[in-house]
Length: 501
Ligand code: FAD
Image 1 (cartoon, rainbow, N blue to C red):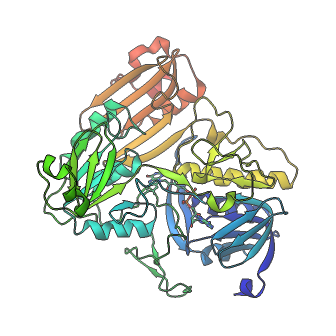
Image 2 (image 1 turned 135 degrees about the vertical axis):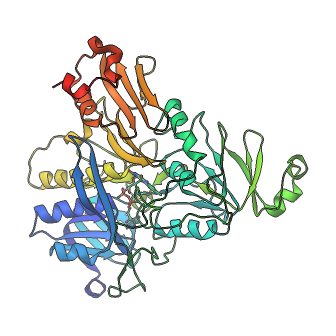
Image 3 (image 1 turned 45 degrees about the vertical axis):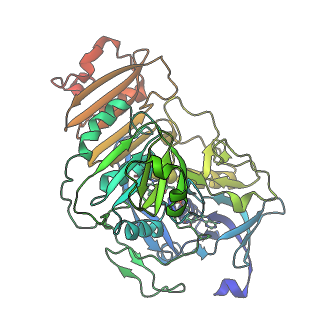
């Protein structure tokens, strides 16, 4: 390509990462500065694009995500260049040089790092321990699952929740370190509401797949893109991570094991994996004689609760580690405790002219008392968009205020086939004893929880078709004193919307 002939190139704006954060940031910059050169550098051949964006309410948003060939972006923005080559090193001080694995040298005026995260694995380089992050790893999982009779799933976040619900035809041992499932999103009450779904057969889902998916035939193929339900991505080396899958990552791929059962999930609460044994190591260990039903499995997981389970493989779904390595050497980025790049309220890192957004960064500003960072799809989009606007404001010497979307945490998703809306301090985060909860629950139908403090609503969990999200969002945003309404707030016979009109 032209880049190879001219390995040194300067762009006004460079964005690293073809996930939601990076693509949104690059699009924002390319459209705001139609005559400036913008480059999007990414390790994977496909990029992620937001489509069907819908503002559901003041802060709640919904959208679909499509994997697309990068040419789509270049066609849309003539000044945007997508370069597929992973960044290997960054020289932040020597005015601003990025080096890629292909030896390209890229100079920038302003840089935004959106390199996402990779799964935190229980152990590295164990062929029986899988993480799920991108299309490739999801496919590997599917392939292994089709021959599996029992798997162990470790983790209690969104991915684990979806996984245990979606897997059929295979026994699942679900290892959670907390007292209840879904601790990242729910309290014990909501978990109790959801648990029965694991024992019932899943409803048949419409088989149509609303997203277009692309297949790349060979490394250099820009032609030959097939759209369809299959998700055969190009095989990539580990050093070239794809972007994170989205909310419906399992849609269009069948998650079936080798057995003729629907759900068979057993939860091991308050436990973690203590040690992993290969078949051989296990037989040689004293555990083999202590464990009642050992069977013959390729791998064994010994838990901290004393139990040991043999299984076909282990899925590690315990969160992500920010992808920062290629950027750190020789530079002095401030890192947060979770090892993300620390950013201020303008998404700026501590290195000059370098911004960061999405899973790779950690919000380092004093947040609104109703917002918290969570490494989610929506926040990746919001941060990427806002980072782009901040970079623009900086170039134009304009001032810009923290975007409204960081006022109130809000998230819409689906768990166990229920619609789930989370608002504000939905789990009473940081409130300690200084909170009051109101709960309304109809088994198999809906679960509504409101978090109040000093008579004001600070958060809510809405599971099912409650239709309460807009009203509650308003009550949280306007911080009205709700003391006079007491428990009436959740009285199903009162149309609460009329109340506050
Ligand atoms: P990513 O999407 O990870 O993109 C990072 C990009 O950087 C990639 O394109 C990668 O190729 C590129 N890159 C990395 N290193 C380099 C390098 N050195 N040089 C060049 N490029 C590089 N969120 C939700 O809100 N709801 C959900 O239901 C949900 N489900 C999920 C299910 C799964 C299985 C996973 C893994 C995540 C899920 N998430 C969900 C989280 C959500 O997907 C992420 O928070 C979000 O996609 C992060 O976007 P990002 O752009 O920051 O990073």
